[in-house]
Amino acid sequence: MAVQTLRADATHLDKIAPLFDAYRGFYGQPPNLPQSRDFLAERIDRDESVIFYVQDATGEALGFVQLYPTFSSIDAHRTWLLSDLFTAPSARGQGVGTLLMNAARDFALSTGAKGMVLETATDNFGAQRLYESLGYVRDVGYYTYCLDLRQG
Image 1 (cartoon, helix red, strand yellow):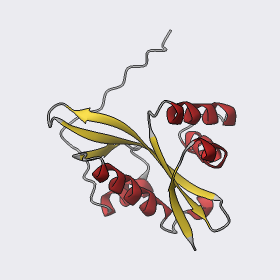
Image 2 (spheres, helix red, strand yellow):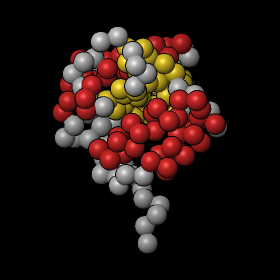
Image 3 (cartoon, rainbow, N blue to C red):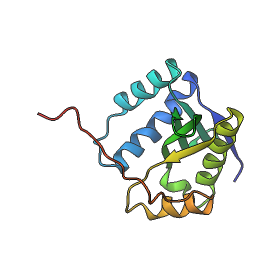
Image 4 (cartoon, helix red, strand yellow):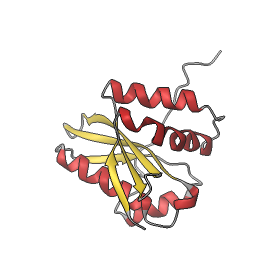
């Protein structure tokens, strides 16, 4: 399969928004393509995230990865939060996830970042296998806490 990894810009929104909407659906959100497209458009317009996607020879987007910049106060260095990774179900098992993860790593290195961090669902075993095969180590020294600011 001939594929290409590209950095997304505003001209690619119609290619990647359906994948982003499917990604959100994977995590239990109802389908809402306009909201997904608007969210990505705002991130790109404000230069708040970096998105890479893989497309096949016909131009069909097969998967994407989205990174957000952050910093480690403890290490006093830039890091990148690998927030979103999704491969279309029809493209799974073909190396698309690995291509995206490698593009993210190469980009982070090019910015002088010290590292990358990510989270995944505890039952997302396929993603966990991918991450660990690429050298990511599960953190056992920290807990993640969340505060929902939209509660009643």
